[in-house]
Amino acid sequence: MIAYLDTSVVLRHVLEGDKSIQQALMHENLVTSELLWLECCRVLERHRLIGNIDDQNLVLARQRCRKVYDGLGRIHVTSSVLARAAQSFPTVLGTLDAIHLASAIIWTQKKEQELIVYSFDKQLNTCALALGFEAPLHSL
Image (cartoon, rainbow, N blue to C red; front, side, top):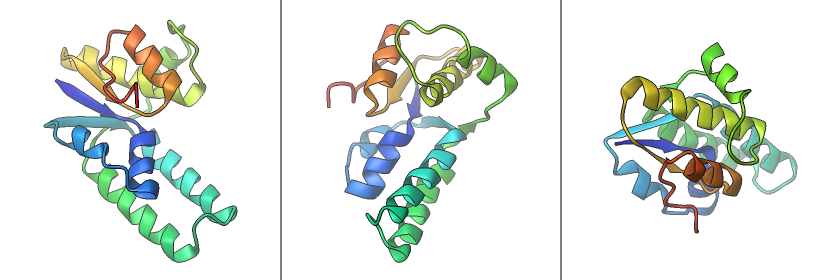
């Protein structure tokens, strides 16, 4: 089984100390979209600009995000991923979530393995479940 880690889990871990990431890190095959790094950087920068974190904590938070990101298999945002993200999904889904799920779909098709999605994003989880993926953090 392949586990897919969404940005929301990493950010909750880095910003709030949430331990749910440990559940995902137990998987031998753990992947994410390269989009995760961009999303982490933008959210952390937004928190700095609105005064939620200072410059020193920004640096520490980026280092923690990078450590997680570097330990993951990465799915590149290719033209195939973007083409799938542009297609229909069974539930309402924003653009970035569509790219995450399109990445997951294409990865599982290549690897021919089941996928479990770790995310705190309600729409992403709802769609993942509708697509037949497991989403253990859906009810949290």
